[in-house]
Image (cartoon, rainbow, N blue to C red; front, side):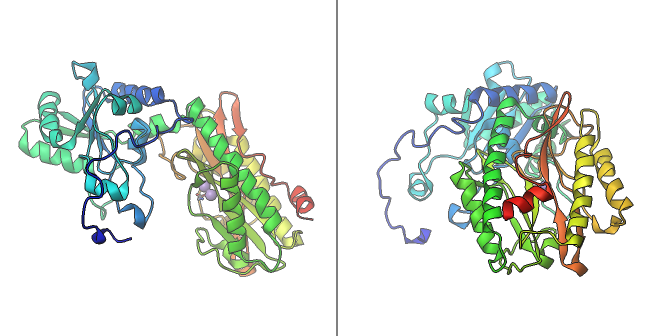
Length: 424
Ligand code: GLY
Ligand code: MN
Ligand code: MN
């Protein structure tokens, strides 16, 4: 339905308390308050604003808040919202203030009902101070005058992209208030977000377990004569049947030559006997995503050449996983993988990095420094030979533990003999 068609407000007033509590069975509400406490402490003398972001109408695609904002508030569905962090506010209740757009009964008929500011909303978000945005200008001006230091928490934009909303705001304040300085603290939230709490690890394990069900479905769906779409549908359907909310990112299902295209998205090609089928897909649960890749033979058996390449990728992946431990850097993990692939003569056929942090986003916020217990990273070497229409990638999700590592996605079969046995 087009929005233009509305003639009259259909209801005289918006119903109250219309939304379910966010993250009810996921992240405990108190954890959001603890996250803000840690961010406030790390900010020191500076104040900062984190933006949920703007977006398109829901019909044009599902909108999601900026993950920094959602991480600190648990609020995923408030367009144009802001979180003001002021660690030096005398009143502890004013150290975090959430600013929301006004309610609008006419829009809410289309997009969903929103709550009045009151105890129910404050309790749900575990934030004592919630205000409408009309009060934001005077509040941030007063704080900027007192603190004089404003910290950019959003990652800096690249030269051709629009300036980030925090920097744009601070520049306006610095033009109007004498002595305001702006600092780059973009490392602060990645440092917090990259170490996953027990609740986050549990959600990610749920997403990974649902993904494992998708890979089981793929093993049953793959055979010569189907197309990539049949497999993609089987995988994503199994994710949701296993309790996932959906996909954490657009899945890749590529057969034959398509298995060599790193970000193949079409997922519409035919699957022929003799092809390898590369599937890179991850389910999402309550805002956290898995990221797993497996490569299967379409006909149920690897050819000699496919098996040769598969074994090298697997050996390289196992070497990289073994290099994951507290204190290691991702470049060292990358080196461990590359050593195996280079030695086998495929250096130029492994043209991407070994992996990345994983969490609320598939390519999650990247912290500076070495790995620490609680971080979750992907390990995903590959060899891509377009001339042979042969691409292999194997990707697992690895939790860094005090003792070393734990492979959270080990239930998804990758042993080639076991794959052939299951596909029989
Ligand atoms: N699924 C995207 C990646 O593995 O980085
Ligand atoms: Mn990945
Ligand atoms: Mn992936």
